[in-house]
Image 1 (cartoon, rainbow, N blue to C red):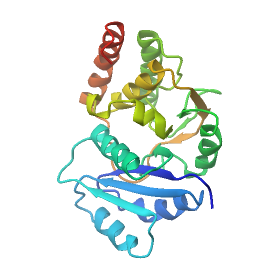
Image 2: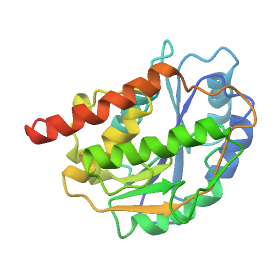
Image 3: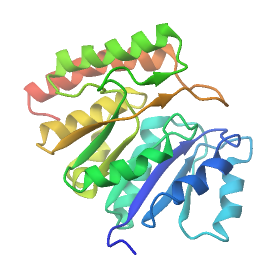
Image 4: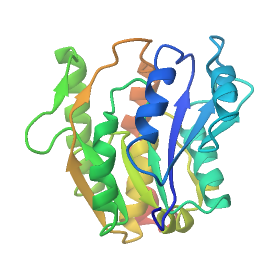
Amino acid sequence: MPDYKTLVIIPTYNEMDNIPKLLPIVLSKDDSINILIVDDNSKDGTAQYVIEQQKSNPRLHLLQREKKLGLGTAYIAGFKYALANGFDFIFEMDADFSHNPDEIPNFLKAIKENDLVLGSRYIDGVRVLNWPMRRLLLSFFASVYTRIITGMPVRDATGGFKCFRKKVLEGIDLNKVQSNGYSFQIEMTFKAYKKGFKIKEIPIVFMDRVKGTSKMSKKIVYEAVFMVWKLRLRSIFGIL
């Protein structure tokens, strides 16, 4: 057995089309892996399915929340769970197969020599499948915009497939993380960067979800646009 413990945090809201297939695949990638589902009161039975599977698999964990509270708060809850339960490596991962579980061993290899590993869609070319051109351009230029404003040397700042060492999450005051949409990804990476943690980007292929509905909205985009300026100003005044 590995001498480290890994937790893959997967936020869910109505993901029964994907979760029954995803869980066994993720667990098969390394004997150290546990999965934490953070479910926002799905109406399609997602949480109930996980509860049933827990009876025969102690590597499955579940946090149930009373309503849809957002991506950022789901991950913060998952991070606190990981720290309270002694996990060494903590993943963020989508439930919809847009993040390929086959990449997990590559993350685990890279995290041995780094503090934060980011799955990047924009190194070694553009590695995105099945997105409309408008959304691809929005995502690509959002990362360029973020890099210019924050000075952070990261090519894919909005990506949500990543792995933290425990000490990174211990070094960030999770109660002060303010963003909740996709700008949450920018904020967490920026805080790790400003604290001097070693960050590594590895190439991944991102495939748009086949089943289910995207959670992207104009509100999430606007939050990200303004968050990068807030992060820069907080950094200047030393209040990150």
